[in-house]
Image (cartoon, rainbow, N blue to C red; front, side):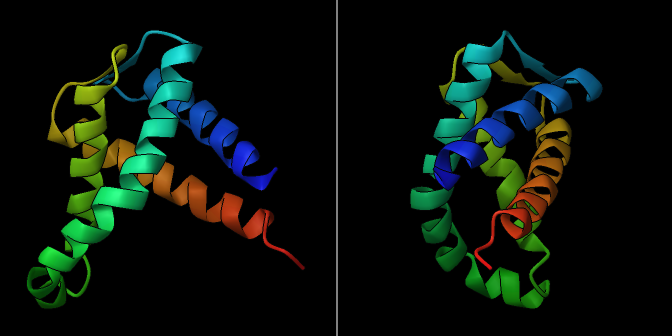
Length: 113
């Protein structure tokens, strides 16, 4: 149940971010839900491999390169999902940052007590 709630909140966050951020376009709720699903799958499968391969850079930048990787994953998902368009790396970086911050708060709210 928590997984579905996270998925819905991520889709709503994507829609809200697309409304506020210039350069991020969603064609509708269907695209938002598919983008949230694909983003979750990419973050679960591809992101750990990329983080492992870029570990030396991540250590040198004290973990700040992870933000760049998040932006690149966000941008990559926009190339896969039709109806979810990101104009460049800047909007992808900011969109990924907003989505990450919201996800942290949702994780705290859904944490078992």
